[in-house]
Image 1 (cartoon, rainbow, N blue to C red):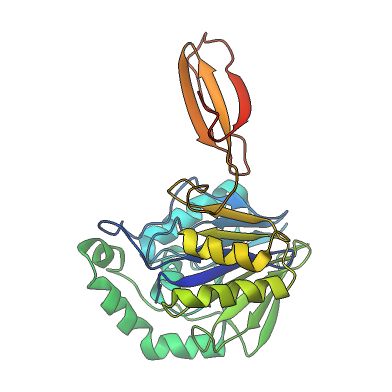
Image 2 (cartoon, helix red, strand yellow):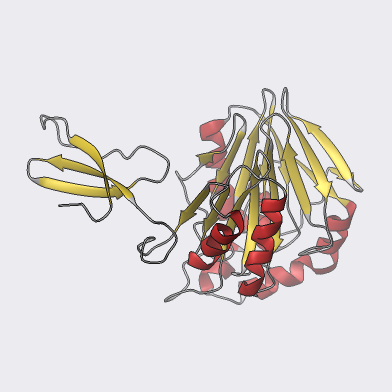
Length: 311
């Protein structure tokens, strides 16, 4: 079950963590994986972030020279189809494998959209968990909203083509992924995925709806000497990571309010783009900001300035 007080971890070099929080404002958005949102984490590793939407996982995509692995393909056929379209943008491989961090419906049932040739690799523990309670969870989620019921209308269990007990290594062609049974944590069958060479691990951590546990989880990542901590979903997780890291580890975060006012940052750099008296401001978040202009408009003047100095 997706809970809004949890850490969903993506580990780069040692760990890259994405956290989501319980607090939501207004009606919950439909649980849909975003298109055109795939981010590259390493030479062979991509992720579709959950955008802090309930019942949407962080989807992992690992691309080798011969095959592609998708981790947590989302909730139901519609999301699985979205994931497959995103996969096609970063991989031309015909061979597909599926893995899941745990058996809950928003992490598994998107696999029904995948072709019959795709091979699901899963632990015997997680297989047993879905067989015992997976479809009951599908029924429970279907009652949350008409949109969720529609997404899950043909959800079904997909038995694994390959099973393992504690550990399994999948060779995608020059890229090896280790499947590691790490449960019981959130569930008995919790599974982590380590991409060799990229030094990226994809795993799931849960604070059991208790935000006071976020500092504990962040501190654990610091003890593991992670290279970078990334948080999404709210300032509480960012503050926990900031305190634990103590300025020794870079923190990447996403908040809807001013991060300086929230105490998440001391200074915010912004890219200023001016075109014919029109000015656009975009927060720099680790990637270039591109703002298109009509044909014939002179090239925009761009500069970075500290927040608070925007005219």
